[in-house]
Length: 291
Image (cartoon, helix red, strand yellow):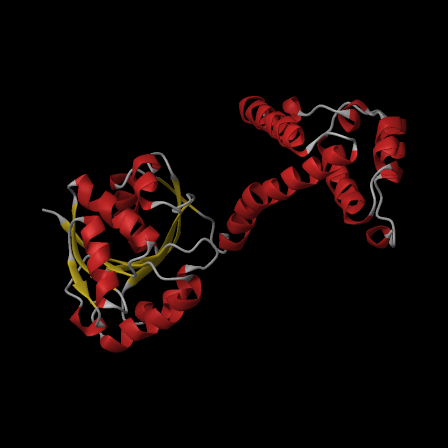
């Protein structure tokens, strides 16, 4: 017998997970609820299942309710669902925020609903491409232990690989994703700009830096960070590091020193004297950001 899934919010994430759940043959979508009926109807059409709704009170019974609204709206929607009294005790309600915890659904938990978050580490920019490429996506679970088994089953049904976060670990988890994703883009920009200062034209700089970053990422994933680490800091070459710093200024120099200290902590090759010289070169310098 198929389990019923209700979806509150018909955006890219909600429609993608709804479509994957429907395609798995293990779930039927009971309803998709949006503020505007046209939006709900469009979401149902994309999913291929479900009834479009605009009123919380009209939600049918369901084993699972996915609250797929923007992060800032999760807590208010949870409060509205609790006020409407449409989720029975023992049902599972979950959201897919990367940063927010299951506690955003506290009004529902107070009514005996098993509340959790299940965050797929995936970009839903294009729902059609997302459905094709979602298989193997890691999905972070956090929340009520009673919700873990049904949400693990849901994650696997849509092609995901669920895993549990430590209690209180959501902020650290999301910080890790931000470093890996957002800061990688910032590093690409920094390296490309510095290459341009050396006379490399913009197109060549993008190819040069992007190719090296991809090679390095592949090596780090295959060998581990320590084994994949190369370059002047790994070799203990303080002279080259000093020459790098001589051509960097402002926030670029701050970033180089900060990342350099992290690299030095990772490096195993430098001897004590080399490490001391590198530590001095990479130390925080008051006013660097304003030079």
